[in-house]
Amino acid sequence: MIEENRAALIEARNKLQMAKEEGSDRETATDQEGSDEYESRLSLLEETVREYEVCQIALDCIKSGESSVANDSAISELEGILGQDTVQTTDVGQQLLLLQDQLKQEKVEKKKITENYTSERTMRKKYYNMVEDMKGKIRVFCRIRPANRNEAAQGGVIVVDKIDEFSVTIDTPRGQREFQFDKVFSAEASQEDLFHDTNRLIQSTIDGYNVCIFAYGQTGSGKTFTMVGDKEQKNPGLMPRSFNAIFDIIRENSSKFDFKVSAYMLELYNDRLQDLFVSQAGEAHAQTQSHGQARRVEIKRNRKGVVFAQGAETKEASSAQELYALFQQACANRHISATKMNVESSRSHLIVGIRVESKNLTNGSVSTGKLSLVDLAGSERAAKTGAKDHQLKEANSINKSLSALGDVISALSAELPHVPYRNSDAGLIGWKRQNSHDRQHLSLRMQS
Ligand SMILES: Nc1ncnc2c1ncn2[C@@H]1O[C@H](COP(=O)(O)OP(=O)(O)OP(=O)(O)O)[C@@H](O)[C@H]1O
Image (cartoon, rainbow, N blue to C red; front, side, top):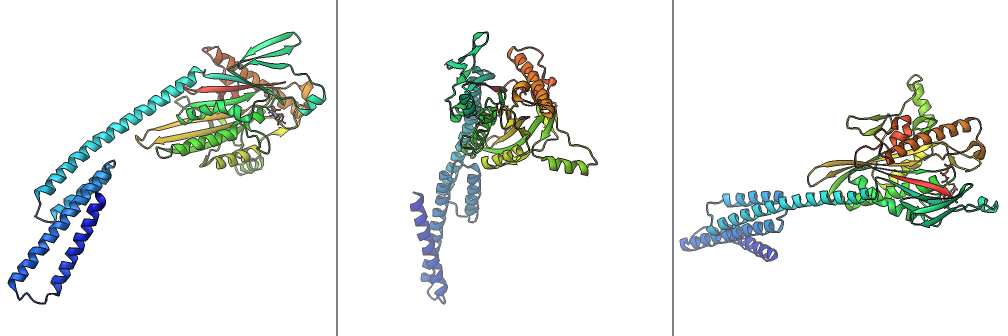
């Protein structure tokens, strides 16, 4: 109908144009009767054009009814056309009233849809996160590392056995012991399998929750492999997979939300927090500039109880690739060295904090969630790792902070009124619960 009207409008305008040209060609109005006839034909044609124009605006308005802004401007255009002339047919007036009525209805409809959408979204968030909560605010997964070539060559015996989805047995000098987890991954489990279960927590972060995933275990048990992946990234770990998942969700929702992703990356080395976005050379340079004063990163809590790393640089990323590039930059500044148990042993706890801010384009509300991904340094026995001198100091500091973390986790699991977060920065930054909805995801690891 719109197309038919548009064609008729063009034809009527052409006829009017031709009639006007014909009029200007007439040299003098010799024949009064002919002149009157011409005038009345011209006025008839003008009226026809106006009618088609009004009709066209009305049809366009009805077609673009979802946008009240577009309709409002169309109405003023329509009123403009009608106001240009004193000739206002009842037909056109009725059409305008009808149109205004339709617009009113559409505005009410639009408001209803927006309200429904907002309440549906709130419900989705609520139920989604209720399901996540039912699974437990603290979830402990166990991953069994396959025996490596050295262990096999030395005739190592497998002492860990997965007996079902949730339990393992371990042969100890005092006999076999059984342990329960929220989930157990066997030595054959892939990186993909591991991520499958944590993937859902990324949605919670985007929904405005604070999520913490960390790997805990003995040195060489595969924490870095699980969190980061192998060096060549043929088997990417939870961190790069999470970066991709964040931006996948962002892409899917880009028509409804405006997102902002920013990150800080720190390491806790020898009880001191270091900003991994600043290299040691950069830090030394900054220290000279500030007359010997070292830049300090400190863990603070704001008035709302939200934990943040004061003094740490935060960088924005607009894609998973950008976030990964920032991560690589941070990893290059991390403390790693060889021990007897791991050729690339992490000598510090790595803390990656990703903040996702989302602005709802429908109602303007803003929510912020944080995903903390932590690769802890491994607990170790100096006798086994061969740690001496500064490595021994590192090991003592690692063991001390892990023991403080153990106290935090025990207190949280037992729901004790006092949780000793303050005993260690590590206990505070990664897994301090920032509100009642937060959830931690603990990956405990074992070696076969
Ligand atoms: N599931 C696995 N499959 C194959 N190789 C693995 C697996 N887990 C760990 N590895 C390998 O075992 C070695 C030790 O793993 P990793 O460095 O991740 O241990 P870690 O627990 O982070 O140690 P540390 O606490 O000393 O840093 C690495 O060479 C890693 O590639």
